[in-house]
Each structure stands twice: as C-alpha cells, then as structure tokens.
Length: 97
Image (tube, rainbow, N blue to C red; front, side):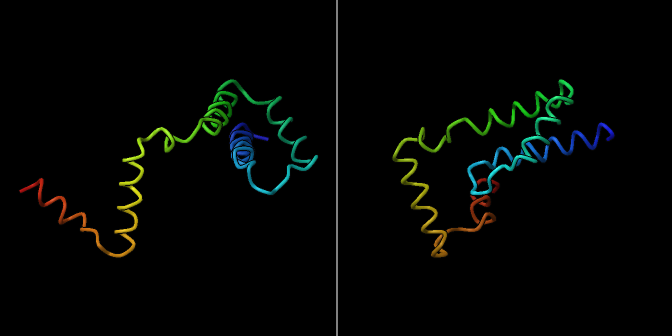
C-alpha cells in the first residue's frame, strides 16, 4: 500500500478507536489490522495517533466552568429555543456603529 493510503487508513482506524465509547465492539480482524498499521506507521503517524488518543482522554472543560456560567449558558439555550434571542446582525450593530 502507498504511504498515503496507510496514513488515511491509520487515521480512520484511530478515529474509530476514539469513538470506542460506542456499542460497536472491535473485532479480532480490526484489532489485527490496527496492530499492522501501528507496526508500520512512521513517527509522524504515531504522533498524530497519540495526539488523537490524548485529546480523547482529556476531561471536558464544561465541569471546570463556574456554575454561574453553566447556568447562563443553559438559560441562553432555552431562550434561543423559544426564539427569544437576537440576531448576530443586531448584536454586532451595537459594537460597529
């Protein structure tokens, strides 16, 4: 396989691994294929794969936001769902005029 195909395939496999929280189990064939790609990946592809897995393992920033900010976001979402918001153009006119 050409290097580009390996890179694309490795990317697809790593993206699948990132989605491991879904109910789709990894089969023996897929595990063997991933192992093959990892054994043949160059340093660049290994770094990319590692970065994807690291990013997936980091906690969501939402829990780090103050409760008041979370509440404000929830309120804004509810207002938006009820069409109570203002358009982007309307908001921006306040700052551009």
